[in-house]
Image (cartoon, rainbow, N blue to C red):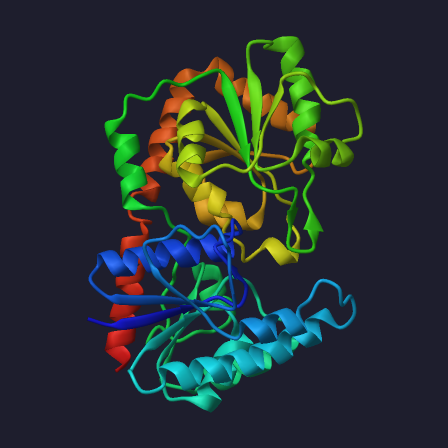
Length: 367
């Protein structure tokens, strides 16, 4: 049995992928028989979790990261991380805990304050200063690196002896529900997610343009937009909102999966910027777990993740090409079935239980 401390440097819980993946990885580790603690500086007052969660450095968090202070946010966050890592090291240094983190600077600080082993998840190419710290961390045998894709593992030149690819994942129970449930597909297309990713706005206006084309040719079909407020969406769209856009605000994850299982087609819309080349959008595995036919923007990352047989690709920023791919799937149910079966078979091994097991195997091989 291993004692794991999952470290969040932000509020918990949170709907962001950073928090979702941490919580679900922690739940999977607990189900495998390990002792699990989540450490966070700020507890949400509506916390509902079966995990042990501790709040650490809350006063410092409120002092340094107050929304009232507008300047030097990046610098203030790094100062907080420094003291937060010191607090973590003091609290857990004598119990052989393994820290599970998502922040390179925090990992570096922890190596200076304690001798605990560290699992470091990396989801994007680090900025210049973090690359310097990462090169230093590579020399530390107590660190196990968990890059999100093989591409990132290769790009950052991680040794196979101290790294393991940790793709985005889904709960095994979510796959079981899809396997065992008689799925009733509606004439609906779904887009799940936010209107921004990191510093970049996504071209969600494509949804409105496609909805208008859809309304003319296939009026019985609708587009469900999950997670984006209607007013925010309207502000990002150039024209009047199409009547066949149905907005569903942020809802519980289980309800999200239910909505996905009712849909027929799912959309992934990202640009092909360098920032996204390492990315692995969580919505892809969620769509796959609901056994949906996926249409994704034709990007380097999406082709690396899904390959040629798990989805259709559309020309970036082209509403006409996106509509053409949607129309192809509307008219060809057999193709929808092939794509949905292929992507479900692909995701079956991408469970949080498998993810945690593989990472901990790598940790134990280094001890």
